[in-house]
Image 1 (cartoon, rainbow, N blue to C red):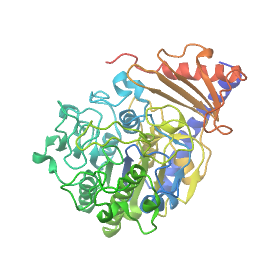
Image 2 (image 1 turned 45 degrees about the vertical axis):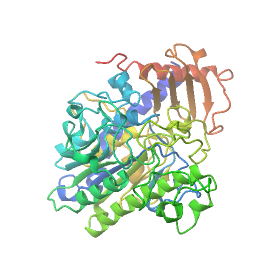
Image 3 (image 1 turned 120 degrees about the horizontal axis):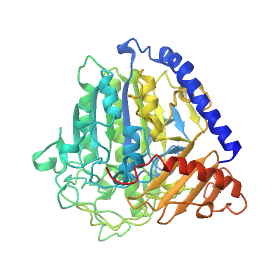
Length: 492
């Protein structure tokens, strides 16, 4: 590693230490008064599914999502917010504050295996230790067997699906061992609550939780299934799965009577492509559900004492062959067009750069954070906010964002790191404006393995600068090797 990079990293570590020793206690005292439990906020972490950077209104005026836009525009928008390339890895990162590779190959792609061992510290276990009531509504997908469900990882109560994507109305996973996945506190719900859209069930449950009388603050992990396939928006016509109108192939059957295909501004109906219009309807439905949750907070007098964090779990699906789940349509080019390269499962920007924000009335000022941040940062950030620390030798990969969120301070320089797939074949690392990328089996072992991009000058990652900047590639490669050395290469 060059002396320059070594010096930068040493300086970054020093800055992090200063933040931890001097600044964080001041922030805790200033913003939440850690000694007073009643002053600590309720926390709602919202994760949408497969919602690309352009599939939300505050990034794209062709999308109708007024509730999400209002929350974002009245809080802090993370302009360069990163996640992992797929659902399970991102949920590992959010729940543990660590890159999924630290737990082994089973955590690197969507699957039903236990993603990390029982006993692993999680957001929920941290909040429970701090005296919060803890709830999960929606999708778990970090171990689809009940023996590895959310109640074993710090959640007092859980509701939704243990497995990943499900039929939106019958709530079944793919045929097989984990097909019956719809549960309450790890016990299957008879009949799977068939006939009601999953988005509505999850939102209704969340509103019930918010409306309960309690002595302690609550932590709610709200993981929607939308806007993941299958896209199925029936409105009041629940007996008929979403299908193209046989008489008008550019319309969906009964589309005129389904509210999610219509908005006051006419945005959705201006979209001519029916498959894109279906995705926009799913976003409208999701946005309405989040509006109901905000309304429940307002009606119960809890809005001003509730921090809301929002992110998608990865980039857009874009194309889908269908037939994987009940009433699962084949779709093509159904997301909004990205201003960047790649999609879900890619380590190109389109797969990992997603919409995200934090909102807390009267506590978080309206602004944007331009510096790169990652969902691994949410755990240490929330821990600092409520006066908690990592346990023993448990090291977060993320950093505390409260200095940037509350006090407009510059975040310490650090690298961000991505790999994907059980048999890992996608690799990337960002440091500053530079990013290295490799596709193909076999870990990158030499400089020649990498492509190099400058994201400020080339956000679409079209110009490989590796040949003209071998010194930069070499420095980032050393950072990559340091990250990779921390991963668990074989499953426990």
